Structure formats: structure tokens, C-alpha cells
Length: 259
Image (cartoon, one colour):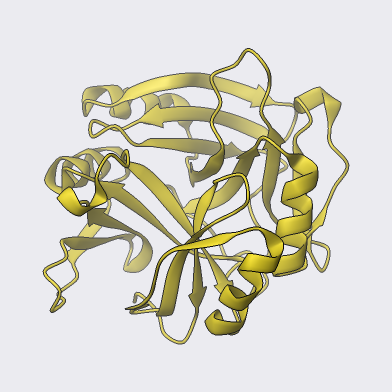
């Protein structure tokens, strides 16, 4: 699927990379996914869209000196009314850490930390509706919240986006819930255990690949590394990896779905 589907409030609609080495990121992701990179936009701090076959995949942003920015992938959830979303965030125990502000005529963005400590972006579309190339190799295919307090996270997102939440049964003792709306699966929530050590709560973006083994075999020559896996998911075999600058994401060979 290469066309952007109709999105609804609470649906992950965009992801962007904060990097300490834009040129290095271009070499890595270009080699791994065949992505192309738009020229940096000086109006938006050097932000640039990433594309595959001319369609937008996500964005990339260099670290701005003096700002509290960390290398990593950020997930953005759609909101048709960020002011109303901000009120629900506060009422549910979360915190708006980046106030709603316009991004030219593209839309409005906001940054939120949930009560369990995980940051997630929020996007109110204007001219920019979100990623176009999704679900196919090289595009986003799933998103997950990793948290140490699943019940608290569940309550928060029910209050903010009215998510329908379904516990996903498994034989590994993993506490995993699927979030959705109107019968449509949108994203997942995994309860972190002591085995995660000091890793902070966070959102993880999955990118689809046609063959997981072939994608993993490319990593060493591109400067990336395998962190965990491969492991099986309802969508297909997956692995958690990192780019040369340390940004973590997942690769998933899509053979099924979370429906």
C-alpha cells in the first residue's frame, strides 16, 4: 500500500529522525531503504522530508545547538484539534512540553509526555496530511509505545483519543495491548520489564522491508547494528536495530497484520 489512507484522530501519521549527522543519516537510510532526501529547509531549522519514489516517508532534523534535542525517531499522532487534545492531555495527567504552534501553512504541532514518561508528537494537518508511502517496503508499517506502567498508559490514551484497547494474548508472558478506533488497529503498547534496564519509556516506529534477513545483512556495512531479534510478531518477523548515530527503530517483514 503506497497511498496514504484516511487518518483519524489518534492515528500515527508521521515520524521524523533527530540526528547528529545528517549526511551520515542520508548514507545509512539511503543504502538501507533507497530513500531520497529533500534539501534542508532553513525556515524550519534545516528540516527536510524523506521520500521514496517521490512520496513522503517521514522527516529528518539536525540537532540544533543549544536546544534539548536527542538523537532518535519521534512518532506523531494525528489530532484534528490540538487545543482540545491539550486539555484532555492535562486532565488525564500528561504534560504538554512543546506548545501548539504553526509550521508555516503545513499544520500545527505539539509535543506531549504521557504520565509514564514517554514523549510523543501531535500533528494537526494543514497542507501536510502525513506520510504518503506507508505499509510497503521502506515505509512505516506499525508504531508502539514502550512503557513501564501499561495500565496507566492505557487509561491516559483512552482519555485523550478514546482508543479501543485489546489485550494481545501470547505464550511469552508479554503484556501487550493493541490500540485502535472504529475497529481499525492503530498502534500498540508494550509493558517494559526489568530486562529493559535503564531504557526510558519511548515510542518505536517499525519500517517495512521485503526480506528481513537481507535488510539485517546490510546493517554492518552501513554502520548500523542489531539490538534485538529477529522475533515473531503478528505482522511478521521483526528486529530492533540502530543507525550509526544511535537512533533506534524496528524492521518488519510484513506477512500479516495486527487486525
